[in-house]
Image (cartoon, rainbow, N blue to C red; front, side):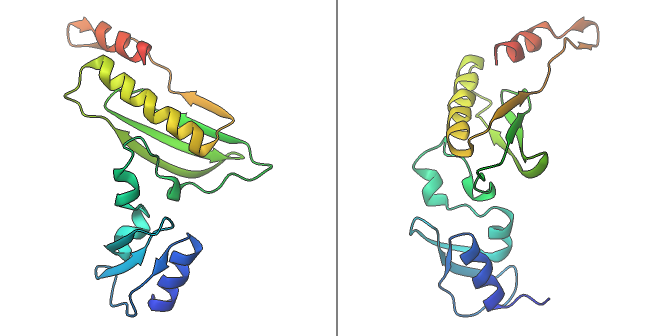
Length: 162
């Protein structure tokens, strides 16, 4: 199926967006659109398909989760949020009734002190729980690693604190 202005418009509308542009040339041509909150956006269809996120919505709250990537939780849905144990970039995946429905990463400034990074992760996780409504949360198990001539005790301690 060829992509045209009508298929782009329909796809955006399915996600609560509105296409303002009257023409579509290709995936890399910028289009004018409006997010579900009413903010005008200028981005390519390729960008939007990869991350249907309104930068204006995200700018107001650094802990706001990318809810456009996660489907609305159904009444009979059991949702699991699985997390990577990391203090700079953590990966997450969301499963509805055992089926992967979304995944991504959350990044914290690596220049922050360890306690500050953990606090930023906690704030993001609280926002994710509120937005995505998981029934269960799974966190990757940590283990003491041996690299070179010694054990990575400080890394183990940091991840245990997380």
